[in-house]
Length: 169
Image (tube, rainbow, N blue to C red; front, side, top):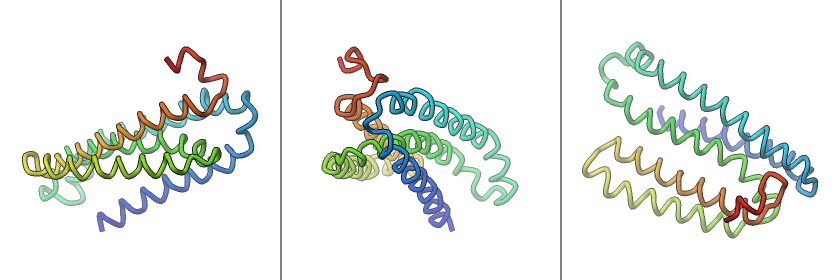
């Protein structure tokens, strides 16, 4: 059942990326619209998603206890870390259409392979010492790496008024 919930979350995030891909393809050559996308839409939607995630974090202990009783109270810390991870994934979902629209598939594939490798290696180490929370922390670190590398790549390779030359140094 938990796997089904995770797949549903991934499907929603995947759909948001596909939704923005169609929009991005129309504005890739229009710096003014691309600038608005980067300055307005991306931060606004990420802020909204972050606020909703913090609300979920606040009510999650009560909901977990209400639905499952004491059985899963210890899972709250892992859930919190994974919810923070979902903010990174959501934020990165705005960059993926930019990369796909400019056909940077090789970068995406290599970056995904590195992200998965980081996650697996961290899980091997952290699960031994921290258990379930170690797996969540490993996932958070891997997706943080992915977001940072994608942001840097987008800033260097996809120009708009939002990314000035001072942002690249």
